[in-house]
Picture 1: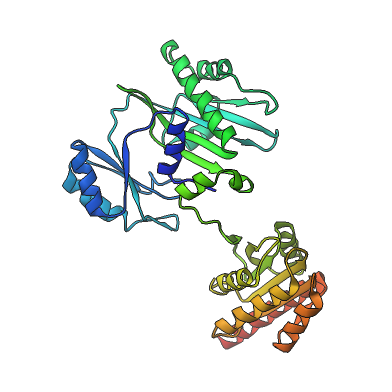
Picture 2: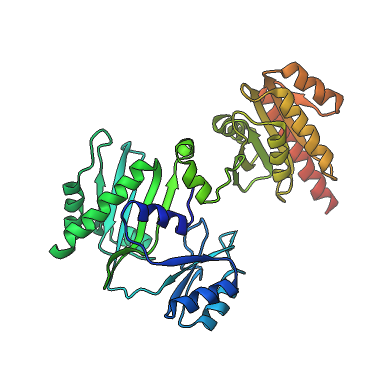
Length: 375
């Protein structure tokens, strides 16, 4: 689960990390009102769950309320990497003396948390990682032992900051790690951490909580206005939409399609306990993705019941007004009932994964051949 910046900052502040005063707004009128209350220059920051908003023009400065109104009006029409800007965070414009980068994330290769820190922060941190990787300090934390303040201070010292900042930055590193650990995070990041006349402040905040741990953090879920997605969906460059109930089964379906000469158009995992309604939503999603010519639904019923899958398929096909080319592999829990429902609806199915994948590829090739002839 990704947090909007303003929600992540609330978490950071609750753990003792200083943030700028700010307000969330949903309209240009609100932006002008907030800027009037500040009575000094402000920064307007698009609240999206993707990176690169600064380079995309999603962060702007305003010197007065009228300018804040116009900028907010422009930002709320913006789309950044496919995500529409629906609200803004307005903060006082800080007098920045220096910028730093701090991050705690999962080092999957070493199976430990890793702290990364640099005396250079801001929007160019990714370029810095490529051109001068030695400037980014990396420290793997033993998850079986307590991370102690002296370790955080040592990381700050290695960053090369002045002696007057070692203890202060070390304290923030230690607190950031505690956020990561306490909230079961995948990433807890401050970029940039800024030095101002008022001390060190988190000018930005990034927080992602592991989805499997959300049941332990319901307060944060509610505060972030987060709605869990029904499934994982990734667009690819092929023309056969692959849907499966489980990441492994979906990947296996993609591999089989590729093996027989096809190209997957999607990875869509409906999960292990998918209902007929989620099946319907998944099919409607891929059927509205233009490159898709054939849908390959690969279901091995366990927690997911085959009859629920069949009902979802039937409902989705009834909803759509165009001909749908679908190959369904359906077996497992309640398979007889599911197969009966498909037969009665006139929808073919396969039990064998290999045969279903072959049929999907052959169907796709036939469709492309007919389209070529028509041209």
